[in-house]
Length: 89
Image 1 (tube, one colour):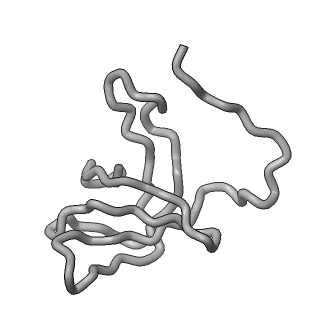
Image 2: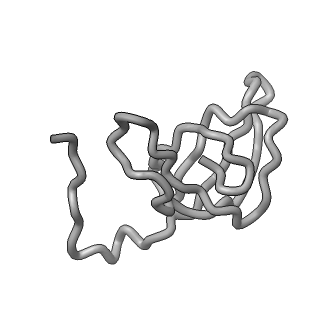
């Protein structure tokens, strides 16, 4: 979700190193470098407020009714040496 407005969307990886946030309502106010965090839905897999990345670009598809947001990851995935897997118990 976007940290300032609380609007939610779906963040997914791209072939490059940026992420893409989909399903953001067209009227949503988004600012450059705004922090994107996990939402922490009840019974969800991820705890709330984990930083995912920062807004680097906002655009919309002419055939769509939603905004798309390019997100610069909060970490450099190519430099990770150790990861922790979070799963439901």
